[in-house]
Image (cartoon, rainbow, N blue to C red):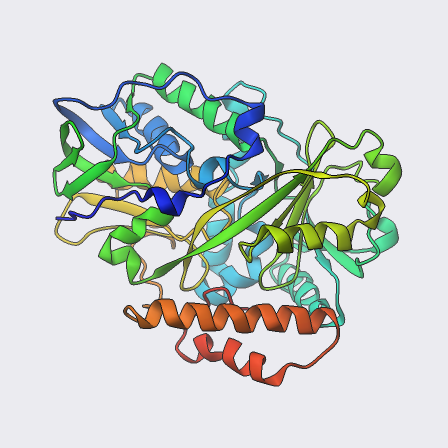
Amino acid sequence: MVRAPLYDEALRGSTEPWWTVEAPLDPATEPLARAEEADVAIVGGGLTGLWTALALRQRNVDVAVLEAERCGDGASARNGGFLHGYWSSLPRLVEVFGAARALEVARSADGIVPAVRALGEDVWLTEGGTLLVSTAPAHDARLDRDVAVARDLGLPGEAIELRTDELTVRSPLFRKAVRSRDGGTVQPARLVRALRRAVLAAGARIYEHSPVLELADGSVRTLAGSMRARDVVVATNAWAVGLPQVAARAAVFRSAIVLTAPVPDLEERIGWSGGEAISDARTYIHYFRPTRDGRVLMGSASGEAARAERGLRAFFPALDDIPVEYAWEGPIDVSSDRLPFFATVPGTRIHFGAGYTGNGVGPSWLGGQLLASLASGDDVSSPLVQREPARLPPEPLKTIGAQLVRRALLAVDEAEATNRRAPVARAVAALPRVFGLRVASR
C-alpha cells in the first residue's frame, strides 16, 4: 500500500501557463465523495490518464479517472506543445534496445497524430516536422550521429541534414540542422480539453479535485471517498515517484518556458514559415516554436525562466524589442535512460507509466495504449513494457548527485557554447555513465 499522496501542490509550479489562459478549462466535475466501484481506476487526469481512459472505453471497460486538481493541471498543459514520437530519438533507441526493437518502438508511436486528429477539435495542430540545430562546433557530432543512424537503418528520410540557407527560420546561432518529418506542434491545453471531452463522451467518469491519499491493490482512497477497482493505473507523471518502483528509476527535474507578445511581422523578421518545432543540441536543451497567433515560445530544460529568456534573445536578436508576456515552469520525470517505462507492480494489478523525460505530449498516446493493454490483461510485447531501467542511488544520494551533475552539465553546455574545455565539469558530468545512468546526460 502507498499511503503518501500521489500529488504534491508544491511540485506543480506556481505560475499559470498561457495555454490555459488562451483555452480556459471546462467546468470541473464533482469530486469523489462516496464509496464507488469501477473496472479500472486511473489515478491522474493528464494526457496519459485520459488517453488510457479513452482506450479502455473503446474496449467497453468501466473506467473512473481520479484527478487531484483539474485535468491537465500538471505537465500536460505546462509543456511546449511539441507533438512527436520517437523517430527523432533513433540513436538513443538503438543504444538501449538494438536496431530491430528500436524500429518497433518508433513505429508503435506512428498513431499519435492520427489520434489527435480523430478528436475532431481545433488543437492548433501544425505538422511542420521537427528540427535539431547545432549552435556550437561541439554539437555537430550529435547531428552527424542522427543522420548516420537513420542511414544505417535504411531510413535516411528520418534524419535529413540541412544547411542554414535551407531552413525557413533564421538565427545567427544556427550552424546546421537535422530535420525529422515526425510530428509538429499543438496548443496543449486545447489538446487536454478535447481529450477530456472525448473521455466523458465515451462514458468514463472523471472526478476532479480528488487527490488520492492511499493506493492499494484493488482500491484507492481520496479525501472524501473511495474507489474499488479490479485494476488501478497510476498515470501521474512526475508525481509517480511516490511509487517505489518509479522512485528507483526516475528523478524529478524542472523545465521553464517564456512566451513573447504576438509578433505580427514574425515571418519578415526571422522567417519560420514552416512552423517547425526546434530544439538545440545542448544537454539542457533550448526548445522553441511559434504559436498560431504569432508568439514565440522558448523553453529551457534547465528549469530556469531567466535562462529561457536569455536563450530567446540569443537565438533571435531580431525580436529584442518584443517583450516576454508570460513565463511558467513545472516538473518533468526523467528516467535513468531517458526513455519511458510501463509496468505492473509485482504481485498486484497496479500498473504505472513514467519517465517521459520531457517528451510526453505525443508518447502519452502510446503510453495510454500500453497501460490500457496491461489493465486488460493483454500480453504486451513492447520494449517499453516490463523493462527495468538502471536503478538510481537511494536518497539522499539521489538528490545530492542530481544537483551536482546538473551544475556540471550546465557548465559544460556553457563551455561548449563559447568553445571552452571545462575539464572538471566534464569529469563530473560523465559520472552517471560510469554507473550505467543517462539521466540528463548525453
